[in-house]
Image (tube, rainbow, N blue to C red):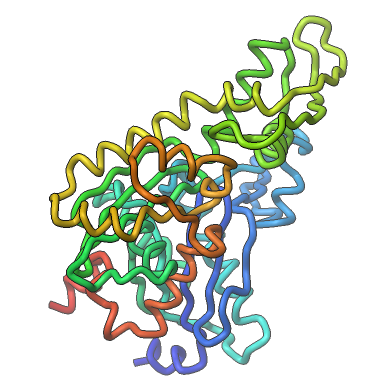
Length: 350
């Protein structure tokens, strides 16, 4: 009763709870938060010092007693209490300018399709403990498909490849459900790690995560596209221990990323192999759609097109496809309820 009363003064929200970034969609307003999924904690007092953008600025620059870390690893909750605090922070931030002193919104959360029942329950519990009066879960590839305006309820196949920070999700969707899917824990973070390892092995250079990520964004590619690009990369010389700068080019970065890119391509091909022939015919007409930050990797669309012999399209604003999908579900919950994952709330209600 009290929850329903407080709910009248709350904003229903959709959350893309990503390994790298958390995006928040507010019903009727659109996306209003896009911050890193990073929390800075004082390990002596267990006090949370910063969340989001402020915490991200602390990564690699904190004293020993302050740890700036991600509470989600590979798209799933690795630290329940800190994830709960992070969700609470985002829910309260949404309601800061309203009169909701104790917000009790309905919340739709996107999560990887390959998670276990225990991992689903962890996300659901963290969301309700953070202040949600109802928590709905939606698989990220389904949310990305809805956010990309694919006809998920039609009796026709739609294929989505969502490459996030921690996981790459591949799914074939028809009649509001996932017919064939693959979820691999190789995505943006793994690509960044590949560049760190390459610099260490080839140049004896120890570089930070943010430096490697910048190189990946600026000159990274999955296939040869256009002219060779170059960029300086700075770090510490492993041999001398002194600062060192080298010039790295896009061919070298592509070589560093090749193993992980191949794993993503193989996941797409494996999903196609499991797809019924009738749906394959539909996908050949419409093509494969790419979403998530990894969709922006240069040449990935052309590489997938050559490997699958199908047209490949990058979704409009691929970084926000999942959170836009959660928002569209919120806006039309009655029609789109069947695309949600069954939760404890649904089971209790039955």
